[in-house]
Image (tube, rainbow, N blue to C red; front, side):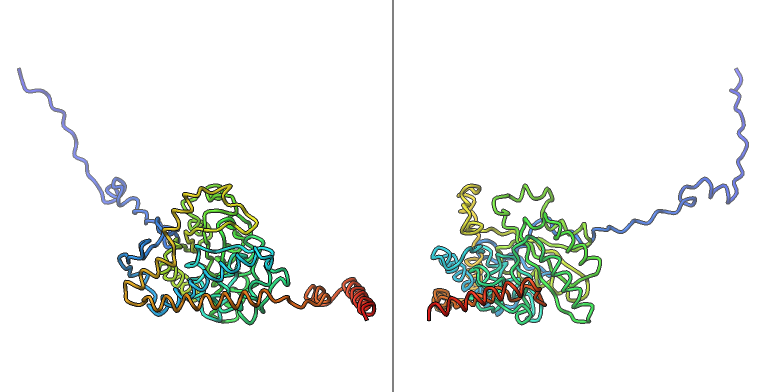
Length: 399
């Protein structure tokens, strides 16, 4: 049997053009990797923490240098005084001296840390819960409590202390802060505005509008969300399905971070970086602090109806004041004598507040018509004159 027939295959002559057509690599250049649009915007997956709950320092971070120890000592002092102020204000509501008081006990690191991260010429936009922050900023506590006493809408001059009136409507201060910050930047000043926000306020339209405007126009504003787990009785799980509230920043192109709000060192470090970011002209920054409101929403609220006592007790072990005290003691920056001296200062502060709040204020009924309009309307003038006439008639009757 002869060999099998093998069919000859003609040789293929290839040209450079044919090679280019046949080779996918040369035919279609590699598509460049698109930049990640979320790069630099997303917060870390876990809140930043620099101190353990017992005050033990955790490994340092190069991207978040620890604040100077002198600043931390001052932070501790203001937190202790602030907590005593908060307790005294709560007592004043029970004595009928205040109509209402929203306590910020447990949130001392957030209240004081935000103030210390700012310069005196920066602006603060508080909510109704920021009384402690305002006193830490150096505002007279009687002036701070004027709103809650029912005398005026604001007891201090906002332009003098660079602090907006405490805001009761949720999230409206987000828009105000963005507008002021943009105006300052437009005029060439490096002023930063910091807006306090509660977790419930992040569900409001003004929160969206404020962040969106600030991001588009690169307004130097820091949005500081104190996530204390409840919007009155509504838990966080009913506010958002996001991993954390800090993730809301990416939708606006705003860089964000989340931090352990009961770690004073971490709060101050994160907010210092956020303020520096805004002041450098990079636009807004969103910070979410995970903290807890130890007291009821206000004295008119019964928190036992929606919170488990065991939950409250668990947060007592994360006390920010005790945490910072333990850390400073471990570094030899605080001792029994210093702690006693600061406690005595806090008691004197509370005693002075108590004495002045117990004094009955002199109220002029005609002041009711002041600051309603820049130019009083004819109707307002008529009403004012009616009251003036009634006061005059009463005075003649008493004579």
